[in-house]
Length: 179
Ligand code: SAM
Image (cartoon, rainbow, N blue to C red):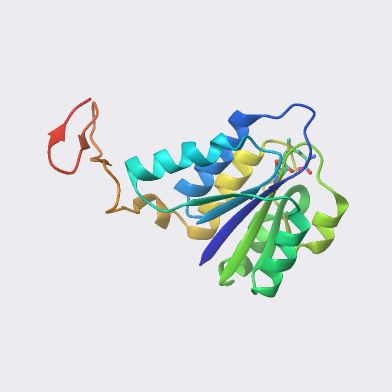
């Protein structure tokens, strides 16, 4: 399944740390690209360093108009999945979402415009209590991909972690080292 993420909504204070975490969760849990606006452009450099060190070609695109992205993705046959505490419970819709070939996941910041609800094919709640876009996104991706992505390995990174019971074992491709 092809998965992309769109972050929308206005904040009184820009929160670069949450933006970075939403982006890292998207990359680590199986999406291939994130679109965002009103973001610090340094995020592109940050993710490019992560890709170089740990592999993958996850993409970040800074956009002007989120509705244009939704319209374009609909033309490309993506289904739109909007994460909101007011939506249908994930337990009820996860089987249907898993059958889709391409999805664009919309996550909000503070205030999400009404159009996001109307333009979406699925308005999905990770429970009907308020929490955060980082946790909602992580749980949705894990439910859709059913944990498969957690075993993903990349051959194009400078480093690779060898899971160990204690300590850190990191292969730097030519030598084994502990740092
Ligand atoms: N009142 C907002 C709402 O509609 O979900 C909560 C805002 S929360 C700070 C920011 C974003 O986190 C939301 O736009 C939504 O994408 C996500 N989120 C928070 N709680 C959620 C939940 N229970 N289910 C799904 N998404 C949630």
